Image (cartoon, rainbow, N blue to C red; front, top):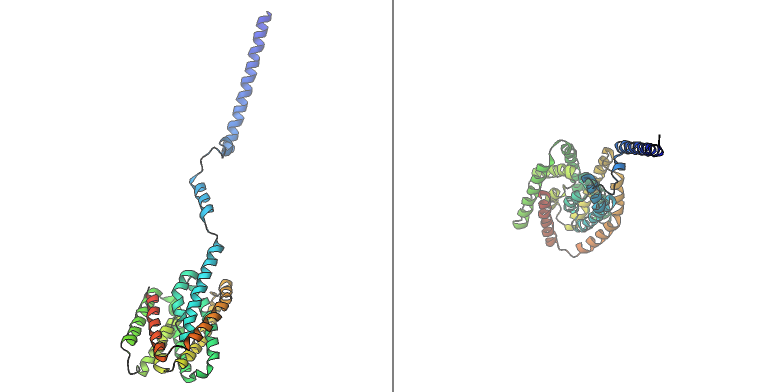
Length: 305
């Protein structure tokens, strides 16, 4: 065998070894790609999937839950402040005016709890401050009739579709208010009708914490002086809202968030009552009744809408 032939054979062997090595390397790469797709296609080179794109967009635009909840709570405190200025002037309508906006901001159950507790505190203050003007006999009648109606209202709230009943109630309030505003009656309703009205007010209060709009019809027929009206109505809500607070605590709808929000609402509540008391002293009896019926129209419209 010549030297040339020997050299040729060596070159052929080296090429075979190199080809075999390359084949093994390629096989290893293919196996790695099967086990881990990301290794075969680096993340920097692959286009993002729809899920990844949506996730990145949400990370950029989503508002933190804590910030959203804080904003809603602040808006609720503003609504509560304005409503309690009215509550301090007239002795009613604060909850009815605040309820529609509060439901949108907090939800129905949370709104009912916070409004019930804050109204209880506000009316307790008004009742103690103006206790000399309380008509105790009329107060006892209203509380007894409302309490009976509230028991039925709480049961109906859990059993019936409340939206149609709520709209019907709002329309009824508007009709009564417009009638007394445009064509005031010179005589009071008969006794039996006042009893039915007070019972119905209790039913509405048990369902929506807003029976005051209907109870005003009873109160305006039996309480002719504005100071007696305010003081006696405030005590009605102290008694009824205390019962409602017990029911809410035992049913589990009173949460830590609603309790904290109620506590935070106390300072603006105090300011609202002080402002309302000062404004009330400048309102005449006739203007007081006119304001009462205008608030009833607004309350009824807010319930219907």
